[in-house]
Image (cartoon, rainbow over all chains, first blue to last red; front, side, top):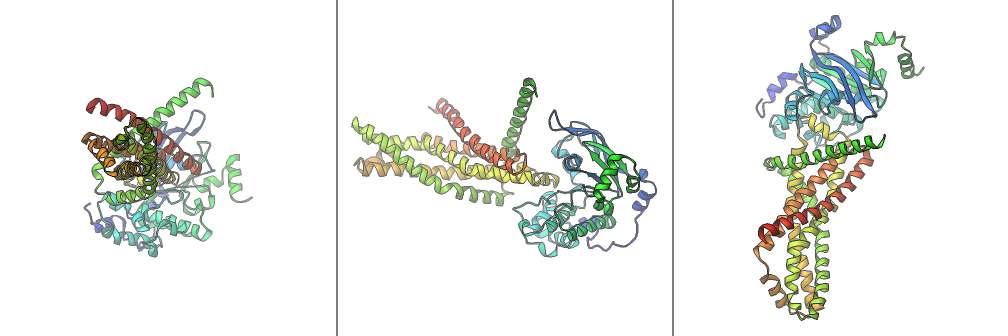
Amino acid sequence: MEAGDVSEMDLSYGSGSGEAEGKGKSELRTLLERDPSRAETVIEFRDVHLAFSREREVLAGVDLTVRRGETKIILGGSGEGKSTILRLALGLIQPTRGSIRLFGEEITTLDEAQLKPIRHRVGMVFQGGALFDSLTVAENVGFCPMENHGMTLEQAEPLIRRRLKYVGLSDAYDLMPSELSGGMAKRAAVARAMICSPEVLLFDEPTTGIDPIGVRRLLRLINRLRDDFEVTSVVVTHILKDARFIGDSLLVLRAGHIVFDGTFDELMATKDPFLRDFIAEQEGI
Amino acid sequence: MNTVQAIDYSLRSFVEESQHMARVMFGGLRATPHAWRFRRQVAIQISRLGTSAGWVLVLAGLFIGLVLAMEWGTKLEQFGAKLLMGRIVTIGVIREIGPVLAGIMVAARTGSMVAAELGSMKVTDQIDALRALGGDPMVHLVMPRQVASVMTLLPLTLFCDLMGVIGGWLIAISLLNTPSTFYWHSALDSLQFKDLAVGFIKPIFFGWIIASISAHYGLYTRGGAAGVGSSATRAVVAGTLTVLVADFILGKLILALWG
């Protein structure tokens, strides 16, 4: 894509105005619901281990598959390695051993330069938003087109404004990240992650530290992204209620192992004592 | 953990950290051709580094010159050689004291600032966000600081040298009753091109080393707010010591090549 070619970018990811909302289920969603195994695999972990020291293995043989169009939830308590999975999926850290495939390509053997085009197809929303302190909201949101497509801020402005409008931050264009509330910062981070039309979005604890209204708004936004743009999402959270609102399937992590991988109905029907306790704790029983 | 495991762990950590340091030093250097594209960031860094260390260096240079002239002046006077004072102060300040003092001051003042800033970005996931968005921390963060550090340290050293020589002159005319013209003749006549060259080669290396060390500790930060504080402290200690070690190595190298 040439610098300033905003229209092509628009075509690849819709106008971002939310017009597609309410248009009904897409073919991909229908396929996912009927026979998930037929949908293309976009992220695949096979026997992934990660240890930061000899004593502490964060992930101990994780297997997971994320299919196109799906919203996969990774659930678990603090320090169980949930966020680590997202970092591994993006190649930000390397596993001790095991295989990670993104869009069918093994990424554990790639260097930073080789990872760049693959990362371009994935957007990530970090836990605290991770907006760049020294840049305005507009410069943050426009970072991807400016960095990867050689666009200037002026050239990217229409696109940035559209994305900010989509996440409900039309008035935040010139603000600094320090002037945003927690919820606004998260939504700005969503706008930044989605501006280059990624096929996959990774959300790290998107609702942590936000007031209940902000949480609802953000969860709706994640659902809208799936419905409007058929984005594949992986959402890390420790809140079952949030997971249920947005997820198609979920896996539960405990001490670096996946102890459950299935649908919500299957989770609710489980007899596993740990999972029963986990559900009871989440539901305040 | 037994002793063997502890040694193994320490060695691994040392190797890992050394590799990271080398990546930062040369990664930033390799990104220097992009400096014009990042001129705004370079300018911001120059303004921050310059203002944070400028006045401190002016004062430090002045007082070093005063002390140097006072000590040497009194000793030289005993041998009737106080007219050599201008030469000794000027060469000492320009070749050695000015660059080292400027290096240490910049390492102390701005080294901590750079390490804390990048460390804070690291613990708030901004570095990972940069990589995830296709940016390279070496190009966006390290290179502008290296370029700014080199570009700032050169004029700062010049100011420091100037203030040191002026400090010597003040002592010469006030305490030692040396005529002003004698001091300046002695100071400037003895000065050779190679003295100036040595005085200005060192800050280039020091600037690069200080920025690299600070950036390394910042980007290598682990463990939240406490880690940021620890990185800033380590950057100052390592930066200051490295300036002294590099001064010795460069001095030896220059003496061997130039005499």
